[in-house]
Amino acid sequence: MRVPAGPPRPAATRLLRGGVFYAALVGIALLSAIPLIWAITSSLRPDDEIFRYTTRLSWKTLLPIGGTFQNFREILFEDRFARFFGNSVFVAGSTILLGLFVNSLAAFGFARFVFRGRSCCLRWSW
Amino acid sequence: MVASIIWKLMYNPDSGLVNGLLIAVSLPAQTFLTSTSQAMASVMGMVVWKGVGYWMVILLAGLKDIPEGIQEAAIVDGAGPSRRFFSITFPLLSPTLLFVVVADTVINFLLFVPVYVMTQGGPSESTTLLMFEVYRNAFVYTRFGYAAAISTTLLLVIAVAVTVQMRFLRVEFEY
Image (spheres, chains in turn brown, green):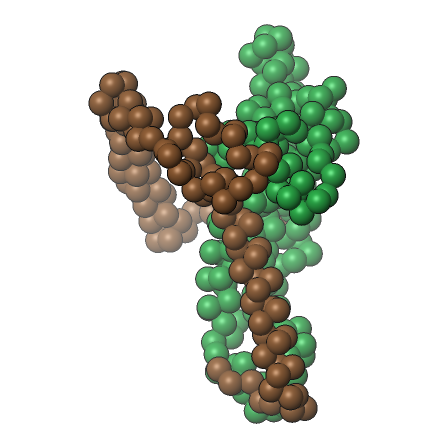
């Protein structure tokens, strides 16, 4: 959607202001992403390497240079990961199915039937 | 849970990434979770960071729900950006804002996992929230009655808070 032009500004000023604005936005976005990136990076490192670049920052802080897939090898092939993963899948799946069933029955009741006490559970205020 | 673990490691005063970043831009290193004055702020910082994605999506949906035609009509009528915000965007977003305010209030009154994972209520009770106190009394000190009393009081407090919010923030109009 176009916004009507205010008092016209020189093109250079506009470009600069836009650039600074977007630089700030990108900076905030990157800063917010750091914990996530660092966690993923750490999963690709041996345990004694995880804190190696955290106090003395270097370009390796968020990049798993000289990393290892050992952690993933362990969880995928050596550990009881499969068992726990199965548990999670079972819980997630059955919660979705049971929840959908029970909640849609409840919603149907509220939507289609008028009964005493109905409004006190539905109204946004009282 | 995962976020709490990551942030606990990042908040470590000696080896954490947050202090690394602060030092990199030549700011003094902080004590974060180990000091009574900064622990709660650190927990709150992590909770806010974690909540951004969820609440942003809901507010985004609310913003997308405002018909563009209204904004365009206001532009044609000569309304400036601030007038358009206060007369259109904000009022039409208020149902969404009410939901976010109410839901976020309830969720944060019931905050437990970050405290449990990151600080265990410490140092010297500076981050003990009610839900952590409930957990500790029920399952560490086995004072179930005491814990149940806190829970019940908390339930009442939340009910009052939510009622007040809905009373004052509710809007009734259709468009």
